[in-house]
Image (cartoon, rainbow, N blue to C red; front, top):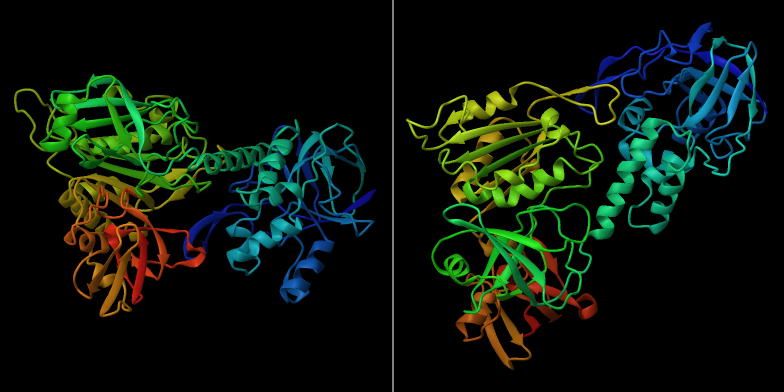
Length: 594
């Protein structure tokens, strides 16, 4: 099949304001006739790419007619190389496109130059900006597949406009049309066919490295979603304490295994376990270790001794003691979904390390995160308490390169604790220390191609500690211009927001019918949650956290509507579960199966 070169271009990275952010890109090009020289080591010697590391990027000339027509753009507005390609290629057969070009095909040019197809462009925000489109256009580009072709130099040579080439088809057993790569990258992770396609593409020996890394991350995301909630159980389940370890004078770790020998539920780093003690008290303790994206063999909780429940666990929680436990729960979790996450900011105070430790362990072992920079601000009393769970803090090649750990001693011992050796800052984090740590830009280079500079205050923050500490740290991060939506907190005690502020449509009165208890109660506007109403009438629903995370108070909604922390729940399908600790009625009749 005959090909001919229409135009050539060379890239020079430059900063452009893309969707409000200064972004380095070399997509803006000026076409010329050449010649250019290509070699097997660098590809095009004079060319510099901002991100992509393929030797050559080629785009078919007839795609310009296709895209301008569909986008309603004057064809004259797009010159050759508008998509940032090194080679604009005309095909003798206009039906030739990325669906009939395969990874491994070789393009043999006049004069001896030979290029091998290795992959294709995955549509990104830079392409949308260059083409004057919003990001919601990108999935359509990926579905159509007209994204161009990546090639590597097999045989060096020169090339200029007008040169001809022929396609030598790949004859191997693994057939990967280049259009399947962007299609797979944008395909839903929940579809089993997406995983199968990713595995098939990754088997090809000639696949371009950047495409391989992107698909490996996609596969990791699919595996995470497949595991999410797997083996979760309803209600209480008996788990046995298999081991107890003394972590410090007042902290013990308890290892829990299933009595019924059935697999445990998967969990996301940051989640907790609702546990019911023999007294009937329900408490929630963070799962304090993470073994990877797999089904865990055990859960570990690390508990600081205090009065009541934690005191009982320390005194009576011996090996072989059986506890009632619900499935892992909670929304304070490491977000594993982004393929290219920004820097993560972890801030822990005291025993708050128990929720953040699994996040750190996941961060520096997970395919998506391990090359992502992180700052950990660890706040403890002094060196006597700084070693808590220190053996579980990840230490590997990724932490050495990407983890910045800063220790804050709130009560340093004058005779023992040396600033700069045992700790970095005295007291809690302040506005000055936060600004200092987030002042300088950092670099992301997940593909190990070209470092991309990111403003220091761009990142995702996770804070765990006492309630006042979490609120203070949140305020300081906001002062440092960290996005409010990127700040996540979990405190040891929670101030539940006013339920009355959750909805403007609550009735003045509502009949709450508890079917199994055979009781009807009048709820009045401005009084309480449904849980508190039930308790005031002598009913004893189970509860744990009382702020909507643990799920202990879930009951089935048979009729009516409720409003729960901003999420309206209705009787659609008659199978909704309601967390009554943070719910108020929004209909005049609510029927609950309790």
